[in-house]
Length: 317
Image (cartoon, rainbow, N blue to C red; front, side, top):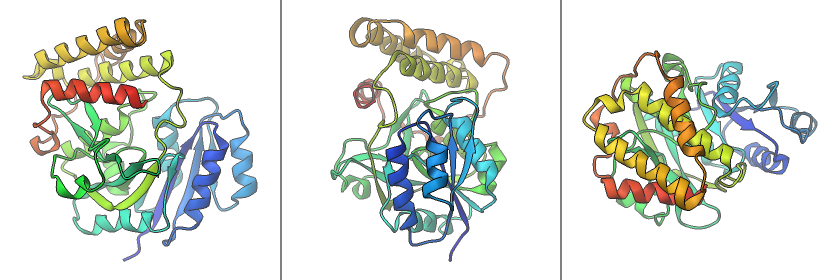
């Protein structure tokens, strides 16, 4: 059964990536509409899209306001029953959208679907959705593992990665989309947890395969990047009341190690710490999100494994 779908692509410069992404979307086997939400690019991306892809709707933001704001703006522009978020550095084969959205028919309570993203042109996994540990820290599920593991292993799926995700519009609207208080990082994990907390399920689609160039649109571990990641972590730790629960000590230990490593070993500054403190302050007085269901949390991720996953993510971004 064919469903109507809107594909939202947030952009900030890197026209060559957006151009290739839109070319590949033209080759998809199912009908869809495309919305480019541009975060004030300086390389003339909006006009280039209009000139080369007349069928694409373009939204121009007045400044770079981050991933969440751009995606939400694009989502509001569409009306289809399925919403797809797609990074412009994701290369989709012709059957990708068809395979990704087909999984929504498997479960009427499926609010989201996670596609299988591979690292560049390898057979190694970038992610098959996201996993969260007991502290609600999120990680790309199966990152670095051989592709065959996507089918062979069963671990808890929190929800899809924002790089390539399908959402039932009803579910998206119910929880209000992405949290615009966060400029970047962790917003897809938060959306996944809020959807699960609202009673929606998430499904993995390992047959919906695309190539993700991974952080091709980001600055390699810049100070701003580390600050934004820290802000996100501090903000969501407070929004979910993580320090008020049983995972408080583990959370404090993990964050202390992460901040210390960033300050003394990796980057030798306090951007990650300052970001966490700013995020914590930004969440003050805001209502707490409900705890996600137990099956949304990968309880098999130990303290030591979470540190290794953090280190791996650090090296990949």
